[in-house]
Length: 226
Image (tube, rainbow, N blue to C red):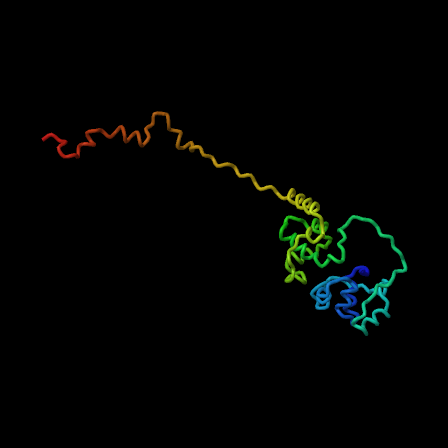
């Protein structure tokens, strides 16, 4: 499989604006989905990206583009660079194989739905994407939102279960703790108990002491002496 050009989306923007190549040819050369190239042409995607001329960077020749414009079946070939630049090892978003990049939006959709506590930087480390893509999927503004299906990135092979568990655990540890709820008191209020035990009569004792037997049986027939 041929390599993708440097800054593939910026290259696709330039090719859409400056050539008559088909969407399929541009998508194949830049390693993008055909619908994404179409979204670029319609102005729905890559609006803030400045096109990069592949001629000036030595990634394409004019003869190669002319052949492709005349023959829609012609597949563009990346020109061999005359300068060999050694690869630098540096920390950054993990690399995602080209064959699995089409599954990446589904994995991001699964992460933002199943683990909203994850930060953008954590999702980037897990599946190797960008903040703009994450925000577009989270807000429903992604160019392919209607066709996205949430899929576990571990199942897709985009990250390991250990890496996912680590990031989820780290995010959970950073969540604010819920406020502690004080237990409700079950004691009788002091206003109701301050007079008890001091000789003050309660309503029940007052009733029992002040009601005499004579008053209870006074209304019964035959209780009065004639």
